[in-house]
Every structure is written in structure tokens, then in C-alpha cells.
Amino acid sequence: MSVLVTGAAGFIGAHVVRALLARGEHVIGIDNLNDYYPVALKTARLRGLIGEQANFAFHAIDFADQAALADAVAGSEIDGIVHLGAQAGVRYSIENPRAYGHSNLVGHLELLELARQRQVRHFVYASSSSVYGDTSTQPFDAEARADSPVSFYAATKKANELMAESYAHLYRVPMTGLRFFTVYGPWGRPDMALWRFVERIFARQPLPIYNHGKMHAISPISTILSPACWQRSIGHPPMTARPSPAAACRRMPSIISATTAPRNWGGWSP
Ligand SMILES: NC(=O)c1ccc[n+]([C@@H]2O[C@H](COP(=O)([O-])OP(=O)(O)OC[C@H]3O[C@@H](n4cnc5c(N)ncnc54)[C@H](O)[C@@H]3O)[C@@H](O)[C@H]2O)c1
Image 1: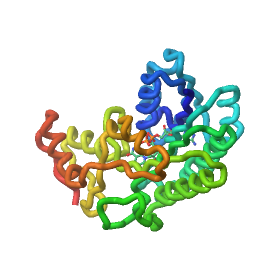
Image 2: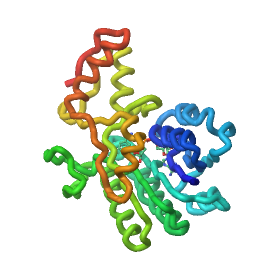
Image 3: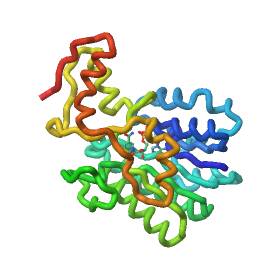
């Protein structure tokens, strides 16, 4: 099977590429290696894959660029698409909404079009728990209404679900949207809480705390990659990856400082 993975140099995308290659699949990876966070981290994630794995082809292109995307995949078979590339980050969307319009709306449309043209067997894409907005109803339920986004990032992710729904309906392409909660693990993202906690604990600085300490839930990358997760998702869009309880997030700083050298982290910021 040949799978196109977008966001292949990203945190989740690079893990998915490795998992697919380990399963013996052919993988075409796409990423524009943008500098939202250090590009060196993205290229390091790809090390050992580009030019070394015969089953892996990588294209450093912008998937919102219709012509560049068509060129990159011309002549390649594509059985499935795992669309993980996006402008991520809730807070960045407050100052940079256009980046989200470009990658998450125009880019998502281009990938849907590709899925339609190629009539792929399955189109899996990343949505986000942020689509739940400020809801206090827990546990989160994929059937619950999620139409009050509190960030433009969340609005683009909700739009992705609606766009996918219309393509699934009109063109009968099987689609699954995965509403990831905060994902953590090796090769994570420097803009995310876990990375920042570790950085600041080592610098003995107070930890940034948002949303008045009301924490979101988290999921280890292993649950995202587990075959069961992908299996369950097939044919039931959208689904909510089962996260750890929010209480586990609150214990994170003490766990990190207990397992690393610095014992005295600076505490939470007010
Ligand atoms: N990591 C999480 O906790 C989390 C939570 C909820 C949802 N998500 C979603 O999961 C997906 C993967 O997230 P991640 O943590 O790996 O993010 P990431 O930023 O590490 O990876 C996204 C990759 O997409 C690439 N990209 C962005 N726009 C592009 C474009 N126009 N053309 C080509 N490449 C482009 C970036 O260069 C980046 O490498 C994203 O859709 C994100 O919104 C992630």
C-alpha cells in the first residue's frame, strides 16, 4: 500500500511515517518545513528516512499550492492519505490567522481534492479537541455539538471536519477525522506545555499557566500510533482520541522534576 503523509516532518507526522515504513508500506511524505518552530528539529526528525529508506519519498512543498502538490505526486500511486500537516497552535492563531487560513483551509481543500481525484481507500486527517471550545460537559463526546470555537485555530479544525463531511457525502471517499488532545512524547513540539515545562524546570523558572489552571487532557503519542486507535477510527468520523484525565496534567511538573536533576521548579505562574 502507498500512503501519502502530510506534515511528515512534524511531531505526529514523523512518528506516523516511521510506523508506516516499519509496517512495510510505501510512504510519500510532504512538508514545507516552515519555521513556526526550529526547522532543525523538523529535519532531525526526518534523519535516517530521506535517501536511506527505499520506501520513502519526501517532497519539501506547500500542499496549499495546487501545482506543487500535483507535481509532487505525479506518477505515484496513492492508496491512502494521512493528512497531519497544518498550522498548529492555539495561541499563535490569535496574531497570525492568515497562516491558518492558508494551511488549514486552502491546504485541507487541496488534500480533499487529491483524495477525490485518486479515489483513495481512506482519508484520515487531524482535527483537534479544541473544537469542543469552552464546554464543561465531560467526558468529551464526538456526538456532542461543537460549534462554538474559542480560537481561529479551532474554527479551522471544525471547518476541516465539515469540509471532509461534504466530500465524504458527495464523492463517497471514506474519511476519518481524529480529534487529538494534547499529544506528548519523543520529538515533541517546543511550543507545547510538556516541552516548555521541562525547559523551565531546568532553568528553575516558574511555569506558564493558562486558562486559570483549568487544564486540558493529554494523550501519549503511543496511543495515537497504536494500531487499535487507527483500527477503531475507520469509518466513524470524527472520533475523540481517549485522553488521560486533566488531573494527570496537573501532576506533570512534579513528575518531571522528580525524574530529572533539578528538584526545585519555580512553581506555577499566577
Ligand atoms: N500535537 C498535538 O497535541 C495536537 C493536538 C491537536 C491536534 N493536532 C493536530 O495534529 C496535526 C499534527 O500536529 P503536530 O503536533 O505534529 O504539529 P507540527 O507542527 O509538528 O506538524 C505539522 C507539520 O505540518 C507542516 N505544514 C504546515 N503547513 C504546511 C503546508 N501548507 N504545506 C506543507 N506542510 C505544512 C509543518 O511544517 C509541520 O512540520 C496538526 O493538524 C495539528 O493541528 C495536534
